[in-house]
Amino acid sequence: MNDSHAAHIDLQAMARQIMLEHGFEPDFPATVQKQLADIEARPSQTDSSSRDVRDLCNLLWSSIDNDTSRDLDQIEVAERRA
Image 1 (tube, helix red, strand yellow):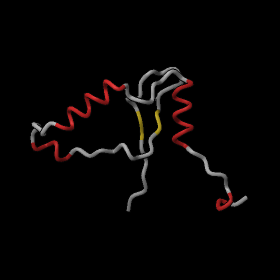
Image 2 (image 1 turned 90 degrees about the horizontal axis):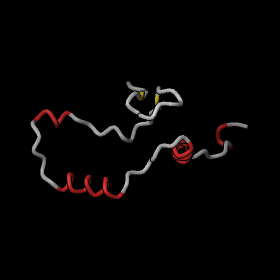
Image 3 (image 1 turned 90 degrees about the vertical axis):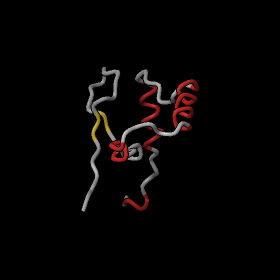
């Protein structure tokens, strides 16, 4: 079977299911979402260095923690660059 006929795999759904099976909560509670909305609604009071901060949430990542770890502070991202 070549790639053009391969079945579609929803990696996000698969990752979500695995997170749930291992006791993670992939969705923020409503209280956290409200806090974030409140923060985003306020004008930024940070210094000029914050302009160098980039949102990298759209990148595919993987955790390098073991199966029993309860945090995601050690992750890696790889991307092809010119």
